[in-house]
Length: 276
Image (tube, rainbow, N blue to C red; front, side, top):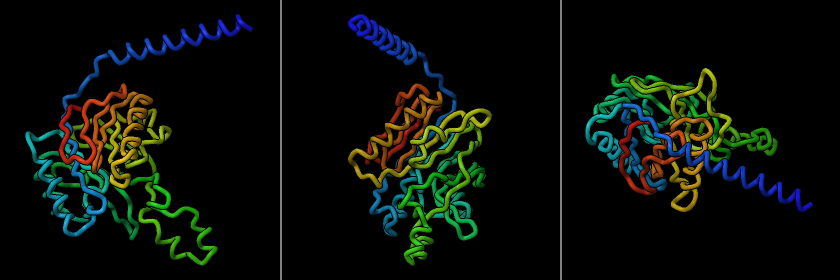
């Protein structure tokens, strides 16, 4: 019994030392950077004010002004449902956004098709045209849709079942391209916590982009727990993760899971960084 305990202890220690040593060597490697500068805009729109008609133009102006700061980047990224407007239906709006950004803009907003509303991501090119879209497919139960509609209908609540969910589900994960940037996989909000939904094989992207609105969680543990999931996706797949959050924490994370740049919670501002 003693010999078994001793041998097991030795094996455990050797494994611990080996894993730690591998981690140190791995993290000591130089992270390669592309020559593409991305600008992440964090408007810090508080949830109780985000849809207030008096504050909507204030937050929109903040997004525009931050996008216009400094030399033009290769792409500008706004967070989830950054604006209450419908970009694909408002060409004048797109032109104004591009005139400030002076670069392609990736942003979150609602999309309407045949009376159905999606929580979407848009890529607006420098000609102010919609170059690509992605519809969130992994919706939040009781927040973005009402699960078990047949159950509610049994109790005569069919109207509740049909109208409680604000969004319809998209078709699933996909890879997108923005003009002049490597291909990326968009992740909206908590889609970034599901490792099995990151694309692999021929569909594997060059980087991951998460847009989110963590203002729902306030300023306690929620935003930090959500942020803590992002390095895991980067490490699991060996891909950099760019995170644009409405109220924070926005960040650029390298393929080793290290945070290269970040904006603190509840602070408006921008991150300008080279894409790993």
